[in-house]
Length: 149
Image (cartoon, rainbow, N blue to C red):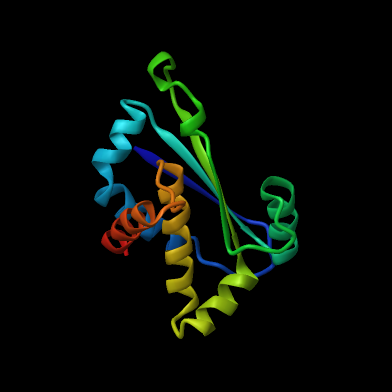
């Protein structure tokens, strides 16, 4: 099972309920995959709502990209040998830029809530091992994102 902690580091008013609701759906839709990753443990996810400036710094430091990004994930499950560990674990961190989410919501002609849901789901999928480096991986990731959304 995954549990969520939402931290808003901006002055923007962002409802935690947006993320809590999609998180519940994510846990339900991907229960088997999550349980396979975690076993009997509880995995904690920290979601940090950031500014473009903060996301730019993170993106530059960790990905070498000199620009802000909409969402970034740090998946810790992939670098930990869970077969030897016991107890609860930090599954990963997700950062989402409020400013970029607002821009993208306008571009895609949907609500900011919907954009947050899309970005958060994308980040969560990365945390449990999905990626989009190949067309096949991207198709698989999109399939699960659609099921959640």
